[in-house]
Length: 334
Image 1: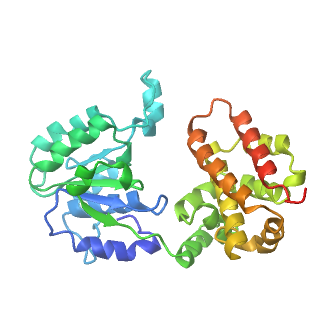
Image 2: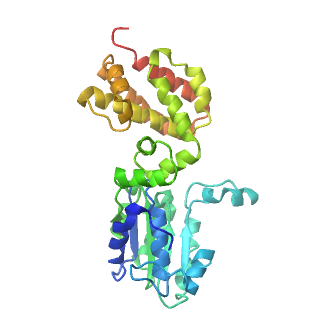
Image 3: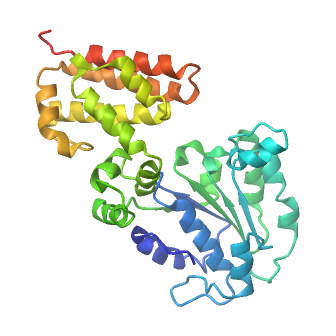
């Protein structure tokens, strides 16, 4: 078994109690970036293992474990959006899709019709489950209603509200806890992440997203953004936009939302959530700001978060957003 993340030990223990419980579907749900998929894969591998260890984990030595590692286990299937295989799709002349299609669900028909290779369990993981389009979700419902004996569907999602209520009703919900700050910070420190507490907060307290951002150099762009927004009257919109163009617009909006959240939180309660190391700077900034403008800024950013996923002109989008920020954070007396 791949090593569990430190914060998953209790979740793993809870999973062991489900081994003997009859269920056609498990719904792994929790915050993005906490290792839900990795836990689901470890659980599937352990269920298929011929000689599981005392803690329920896979032995890593039996033929089943070897097949699983090679990606050729006859009793396991993994469905994900086609966009996860963009190189393969591009080579075939197809435009990658970000959805799990009904054809992908229907492709399980032969798999479901066969008996288990080893006479035991079979497992299908669907990730992210919210990527199923309407037809795919309805096709899955039929499979969940009358699955063959021993077949388990594991749906992994961080957007359970996007799934059909009927899918919820046919699956056993398994909520994964968000790791505590201390455990997540220790993990990031061990991975060599600089300023792990700040990186964790910037990622919405999702350690794996914080690690990815650090690997991709996103922390540098965030630091430049935060230095600039501290002084809105002198903010160089065009220069900052040039820096941020290398970063996804969704990520930039998220950083601004976190900053805006702390501005409002400091103004109303004197506390901070994401930028605890900048308390003095934020306190001085918000002392001159109109609470109504801070509320307007949050509303603008909520709209921008939706628009950021399909902007036609990223440069214009970022410039407009930064100009709006500067306008709404003008001191009341200016």
